[in-house]
Image (cartoon, rainbow, N blue to C red; front, side):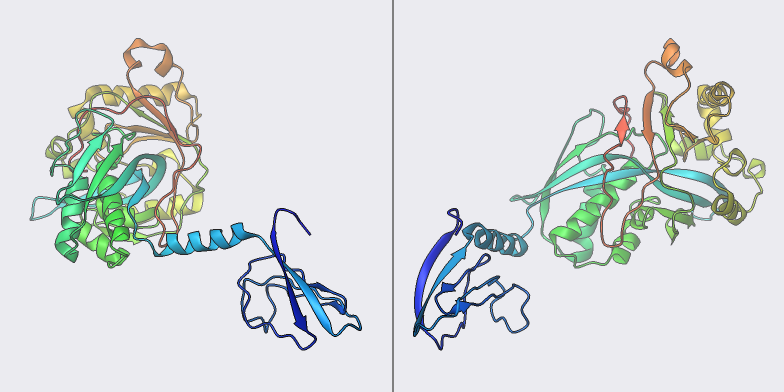
Length: 400
């Protein structure tokens, strides 16, 4: 027998029966009358912890059996039961951002918002948020960068307040936000943080709300937040809160590079300068169809917010033009995401050389990324290859 395992000897008569044995594995019963083996999957086995029993036939009237078991297996099983039954106290989640592969602005609404039609897709760049239950009746938020509001102006705190309002939950949290997504970038980093906070709060409360509930509630605090409750790709309309989940329209492993200057674009200022009579007239559904059939190309990556954003930040237009002219066809498409100021190059993870060589661009934010999705009832997971090459901007993203 293996010396690392405990054992005991049991004498019994030839008419022995086993009613209950609470040992996990490697049960060997040796006796002069023969051998008897029990496997863990035996149909008539009453205790699933019994894995093997062996006895030897002989003419003797009594038999002696040796039970051998691994006590670590029993301990591991008990630990698993404790983990399963214990209330959740800490949770760390990935909070990915998004890009708009195309963004059409279709009309202005009576409530002052604009209707849009856009292909949103989650990408592998994201923040990490750590949640811990707080013994106090107040949320406390910390972060690794300056300039991010830590009070109820932050969408994370707004999301937790919203969850308590909708469910009656009395749970409060300590939250640490490890920020990698630049703010004021058109990447929806703040919206993703809010969606992640709603998901986390629901996990701590035993998932008393459905994903559909969370998605509907989230539109009360931000137009882009509902998108993150899709599975990663969606055709969004209305203010952005009407979300049609899609299977990934393009391969997830297509590389991209994100290039964002230090200057941010104010979403409000960009929309203020938008002129609907100068927007594209292309049917957004035809753009979606072309992307699904033929992949991403420059002609389908239309963003109606580029002209007003380039008015707000003329250097952004020059940056886009220079990326296109210097890439020599390396990118399938180059476009601005959301309301800016991030320029996305699809097809290569590497920025043009001038980004490194020209002093004008020494402070830009650079990150390589891929498209990302999630499985139903699971939150997004950070790919091992996700990387950012400079710290995020310090301008707080409060709305989009």
